[in-house]
Structure formats: C-alpha cells, structure tokens
Length: 150
Image (cartoon, rainbow, N blue to C red; front, side):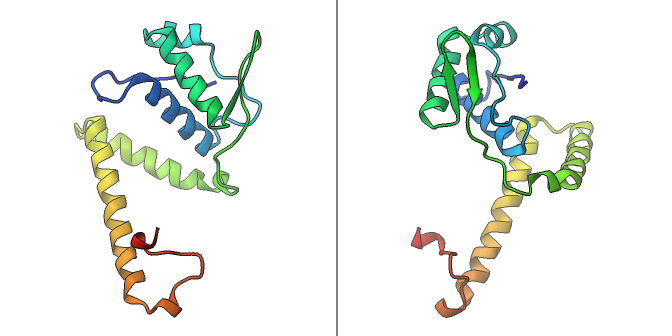
C-alpha cells in the first residue's frame, strides 16, 4: 500500500501531490492493477488534510482512468503506468537511492535534490534535441519529432 506524504511548503495543492505520488507508484510498479489505495480516512489520519481533498484526488484519478471507486469496498488501481521492462530498472534504482543518500548526507534538501535531477534531465534532453536537429529530416528516427513539431 502507498503512504502519502504531503509537503505543505511546496506550493503544490495536496490533492495534486496525492495524484502525482500515485502516478509515480504506478510508473515504478509499486502499485499494480487490482491494488487497493488507502481509504480517505486513512489518508486523512496520516496526513492531517481535509477528507474532501483526498476525495478530489481520487475522483481526478478515476476520471483519468487510473483507479475505480467501488462504493463500500474502496478505491482500486485499474491501469498501470509502468513500462514493460520497469523491473529491469532495479540496478539504476539502487544507484539512485545511494546517490540520494549521499546528497542528503551532504545537507541537500529535497528541493535541492529535485533541482539537481531536473537540471540534469533538462541538460540531457537539450543536448539530444540539438543532436537530432543537426541531422537532416531523412536521418531522423521515424517516430521521433522535434520539440517544435509537437
């Protein structure tokens, strides 16, 4: 089962944080189709947020087709976001977990770690978009589009 963590200082609404955390758990394979999410009452007890906030997050996820609310039974995952080979990511997860531990030990806050990772991703993506742009249109991979083509 997933344990939600609400960061009140992030500026991100609590219901969005619940949706994002659920999507991450689905993407990582932590939550699977058929798994039951915690009840609104359990989330409220763990996070001290308003029950309507939890219900809004669950309704948003239901509208997105990620979960199904079954009256009297709970909320169940109906769709996975995990890539087919997500289980092969275990070595990368271990390396990243070790790196995060080193970063936190060095005094970096959560926002600092996120900023570093986001910057690294942006740098990587920008470099690869430029590589793609330097090729002639016929050299591009068939299903890849330039950013401005999207």
